[in-house]
Image 1 (cartoon, rainbow, N blue to C red):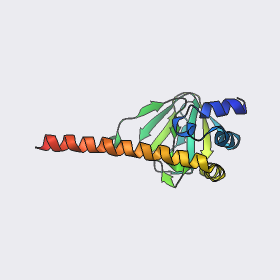
Image 2 (cartoon, helix red, strand yellow; image 1 turned 180 degrees about the horizontal axis):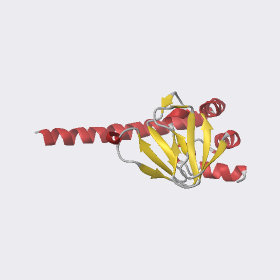
Image 3 (spheres, helix red, strand yellow; image 1 turned 60 degrees about the horizontal axis):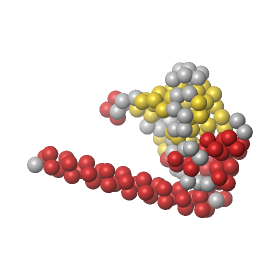
Image 4 (spheres, helix red, strand yellow; image 1 turned 90 degrees about the vertical axis):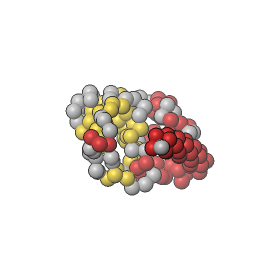
Length: 153
């Protein structure tokens, strides 16, 4: 893939699309591709994550650390795993295993932070996106709480 292809691919990832073309160019230049054979583990639950991974080709089976945390599921191209670890120290809550030959693009936390420092407008757009998502999450949680309260009475 060319640099322009990588930028266009990043623009399809919802959390990255808000950053803008120039910021994505920095990420595309500094990101690393990794090819996984079928069955290879990308990372384990409980490991400290130092960046995020975008599925470029193939698919990953995502397994929560325990069955109580939910069922396993599969993600494909355009999925960003480890979004929070792009910004801060985070422990992976899941294990990711290649379901088939898979290519992922790794963005290190250091690269992501340098990009945000160099493109403050991108950082502001990302902050706005995250604030909107947190607002939606809070509304969803309030709706669940109201439903639980009604069922309890």
